[in-house]
Image 1 (tube, one colour):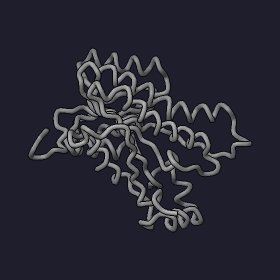
Image 2 (image 1 turned 45 degrees about the horizontal axis):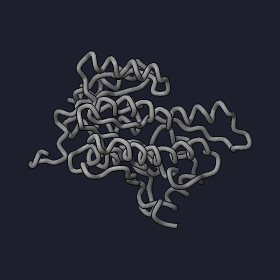
Image 3 (image 1 turned 60 degrees about the horizontal axis):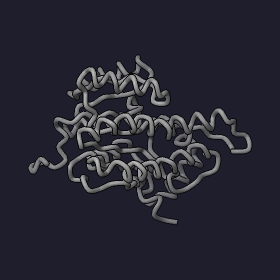
Length: 256
C-alpha cells in the first residue's frame, strides 16, 4: 500500500471492456488518473484508435485490446497475446453491455440471447481468463458493472434485467471461488446515467421527469461519478471487500 496515497494505482494495468466511450471510458479515465496503465477494449477499431489517440493526448498510458468479449476464442486469444507481450492484467472492469427494449411477449429469442451474451456471459469469459493469471500471481481486482436492475425489474428490458441480476450473483460466485487466491471481485450498480445508450430516454420529457422525480438527488448521474468507486475497489484499501455491489444511483434504490 502507498501510505501517502492508498488509492494510487501506479504500476497496475487495467483492462476495461467496452471502453471506447460511455461509462467504460469514464471508468478508464478514473483508473488512469489514479496512475493505472489502460487497456481499452472494443470491436470497432476506428473508434478505439480515436479514443486511444485522445487519451494519449491527455497524458494517459494507453494500449488497445481489440477483441470481442462475447466470443470465447477471441477472449482466449487476447489473453494469450497479453501473455506474449508480458502484459499482466491487474485490474479488470467488465463493463461491456448493450440494451434492447421490447415487451417479453414480443421478444425474439436471438435478442434475448444477444443481451445475455454481451452483458453477462462476457463477464464470465473475460473474468475467467483474467482470474487464471491473477490467481497464479496471488493478486487481482475484478469489477463487474451491474445496474439498478441487479435488484429491481422494469417493463420492456427483461434480458437486461436478467443479465444484470446475474452480474450480482456472478460477482458473489467469483468471490466465493477466487478470494483465497488474492482476488477481490466486486460490482458497481450505476443508476440512470447520461450516456449514449440512454439518449432516447434522456430526450423523452416524461421519462426524464420520472428519473428526476424518482431519484433523491433529482438528476441523472454523470459517467465520471462512477470513477471514484472504481478506483476504491481497484485499490489496496479494498483488499478485504469481496462479493459486494455498490450502487451509485443518487439514492434511487434506497427509497420508495
